[in-house]
Image (cartoon, rainbow over all chains, first blue to last red; front, side):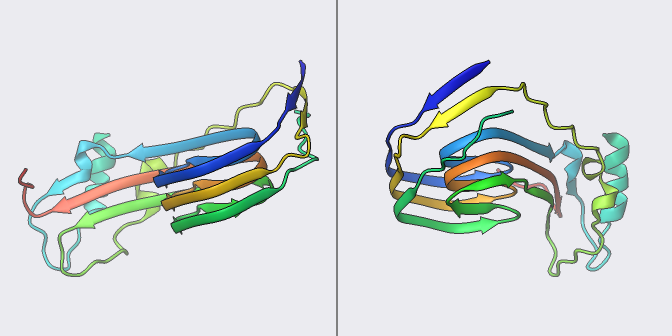
Length: 70
Length: 130
């Protein structure tokens, strides 16, 4: 396939953006290739509700449980 | 792929305000050949008077170990871009935040390959009331 792209004027007035997050692109201009990937892991098990001792963080234990249950 | 951007065009910018560019992100005015950001995030929220990061390791979570899918192989194209000498004009852009392997650009860029991996953990003492 062969094709020609003709670009003439590109004028941007006023843009307000609150946020770009997690492999996002906001492009004013030209591009050839975009490939974006985003992996999220927020399962119900990631919410841990229990009294926590002051300095004994049990993140390692929680991580093990998390992996087993997923 | 043969699409060449050998005739990049000028970017004329009047006013841009970006408050935050964080966690492997970019803000570019002008041209770029390739942009390939990667970010790994362990987002931990816990109700404790002191916060320690050492109990948390990327190796403990599968999301950070999974091999990345290979990028798509694109079909070859014979494409030509003619900008006719025109520039990119931007009067005003306001952005609060660009985060986690993201990009804000005014100009031309040939290739973008971005990847982010995010794991959320919340450790609370009690149920949250609604």
